[in-house]
Amino acid sequence: MPLLAMALLGVMVAGLSVGAVAIPPSGVVAILAGELGVSTPWIYSEREALVLLQLRAPRVLAGVLTGAALALGGVLMQALFRNPLADPALIGVSSGAAMAASGFMVLGTTVPWLSALPSVWTLPAAAFLGGLTVTLVVTRIARMMGETRVEHLLLAGIAVNALAGAVIGLLMLIANDAQLREVAFWSFGSLGRADWPVVGVLALTALPMLVISLSIHARLNALLLGESEAAFLGVPVEALKRGLLAFTCIAVGAAVAFTGLIGFIGLVVPHLIRLIAGPDHRGLIPASALLGGALLTLADLFARTAAAPVELPIGLVTALLGAPFFLVLLVRDRRAEAIR
View 1 (cartoon, helix red, strand yellow):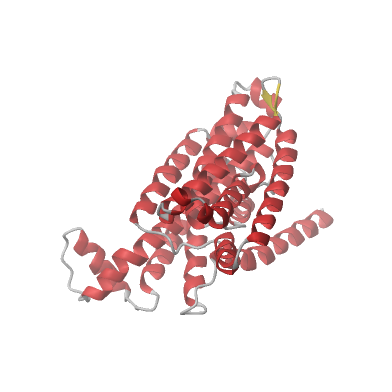
View 2: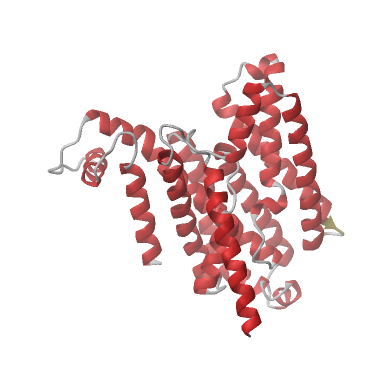
């Protein structure tokens, strides 16, 4: 845990320092200390302070909070499905958000009162409501006779995800060139929309998710044994499953609404921590939050500097880096099973 905390701190400092306007670490410390009323011997310019406080600091914090939310969503979904390959997208929150956001970008201009609203907040609101609605539909389909069946939840999620993908495809067919580029860029994700109000919204969803997840770590450990076994141990299984779905939908839905689709963080991070430290959620939850925040912030740093002044979509970076890494993990697991 201390190593992960140090890694997160180092990545945050790098994210604040590196860019078109280079700010040395001493300048970063001086600017932040100056905001707290603490004087330091280091000198910085007004331009450096403006860039750090208004552009980079909100973006770095948004990356940390989004990465933590996605990783925690992966932890909760893997506990719910009792499968290390599960991620938040299985319940439809990401595809629902993408479908609603695409509909807003393509069809919103045809509705006069809707096109008059500022897209800075209406687009994230549409994406969040879309993710919430699809998750509620998936949960309702999977709920039979007062019980949420995990296998039905998985099948319903797959079907609804496919339907949302088809709707997005139809919207892209009728979109003009500008709308098509906007939908494509949003679908790959970006932290470029991050500002202090966005950071506040992300903090109000990600931080409670972390606290609540830590408070139920024993119940999550019991759920890994199976639903019947967890019920015998006194765990309110049905209420726990509903809570896991609600926490994941709200936190991940808010993150996706502001950043677009970012893959592999919710899948790879919990799996990697589980390989290193085991399945105990007491350590798995905070470690995944730290590593998720660090990895997404590092991916954003690479996305905005690798091809500067062009900014790469962050979801493209996580997919290019995460997919080969995950394949290596799978091959290693297969070899380990063959040796045993």
